[in-house]
Amino acid sequence: MVNPGGSSQPPPVGSGSLSWKRCAGCGGKIADRFLLYTMDSYWHSRCLKCSCCQAQLGEIGTSCYTKSGMILCRNDYIRLFGNSGACSACGQSIPASELVMRAQGNVYHLKCFTCSTCRNRLVPGDRFHYINGSLFCEHDRPTALINGHLSSLQTNPLLPDQKVC
Picture 1 (cartoon, rainbow, N blue to C red):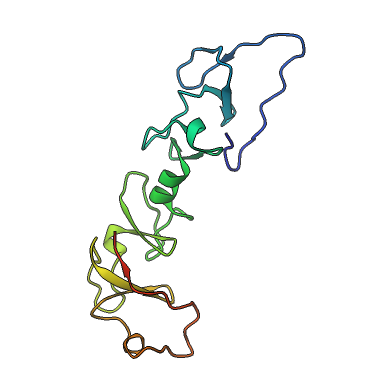
Picture 2 (picture 1 turned 30 degrees about the horizontal axis):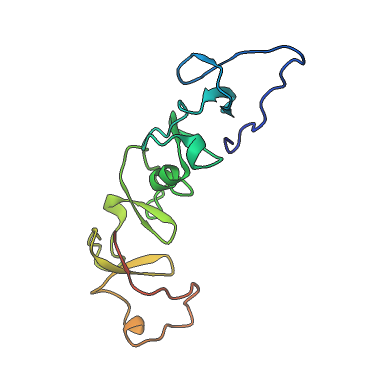
């Protein structure tokens, strides 16, 4: 297991001596054939689990993430914090316990996931358009999009309409 930003190599063990490691999860001795090392600690493979989904992290990948006192699998880390840990609309931090909305790799507070024109909240099941970093509801999509062309101000490739899941 690798903790991004942390040491990925365990400290050396003295040669010729069998040194029992203690699990950071349960506190017990690790006598298993395999053990995990992350966050400067050793773990039984059964004890290193995602704080959200309880998946055994040694079984689902080679990395884990930590934030706000939680150990997370990659999917839950991205779901909770996105790439930056801040809302793409307001820039405020998103607490680990808060549900979020996502569009094109950006993460939003539920209250901030709104149409750029009418400011109505977009909810699961709504169709929306993501253009130049802005969200538009189906009703307020730019008329250039309806006519099939965009102005020269378009910097990001046009993506087909999307549905909030």
